[in-house]
Length: 369
Image (cartoon, rainbow, N blue to C red; front, side):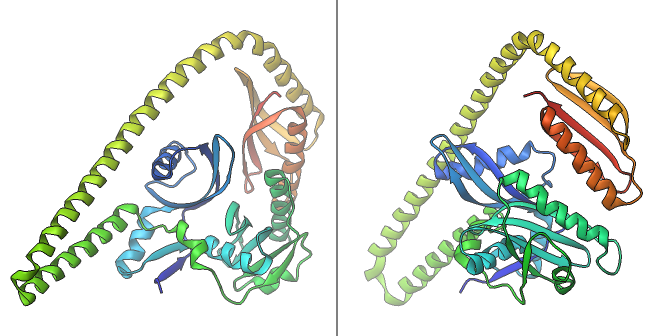
């Protein structure tokens, strides 16, 4: 049985990513290139993934990304471990055994924060952490949990009715008035088949292990030759040729990956040139719509008594606005901020949003439909 370590990581990302469909042997490299460009990914990183959906031209993958230093620290303490996964992934597999392949919530209720993950068929689709400030769960934390349940509906368009919760504060959380029903979980009961694709041990280390295993086989073969005698010389020659063939095949695969990487870079440059030309031609047509959207945002913010704003900026087809929600508590501030976001969603598409619950400050970018 493989040795598995399930750990709670300080810097991690769990969610989905859509990429173009490529051969399986190039998939990991393409995902790594996409993750390198994202500012919300901890770097340097290591990751595991599972394909959770696909179309004719696109793949959707469920990702578990953590900081590489944390995984290397586990390997220093347990150098022979076969698989390292995050607690979110282990919880998703455990929930699959309880609820089947449908949507469900997996919640880790710990003193350092409530880790909430939306899962389907042992794949993590969305994950976030609700901070806990006191020694027990307060109304603010419970309201943030319920708000997260509701917010996830906007992410996947479906609200799971059940979930599992584990941790020292599980009973406290279950006792609250939650919009989703949670079952207590005493211990993780995951399937290795579910979690193995999310193995966080860097591929370079796994490759070295495989090469080390191959070297040990060769040494044993040499020892056997000394014992058995010259009659096994032919077998040794066969093993040598087999090793050369394996090395040659691996070298060809590396060359194919490098060639594909160059093609991807060339295609990306061509796409950027084409996109730049198209955007220049469209900028004059979009300027009026952007100005109209900015004016609508200004009128909305002026009409809302619970919002003060620093300024509105319009650039290309996007409008940026930052300000502060007038609220006495973090929970009230978050609810008012959620209401403000709903107003903006009716005006256009929210490209990005950030919210500081301590200062009640926000920053959003909108794009017209």
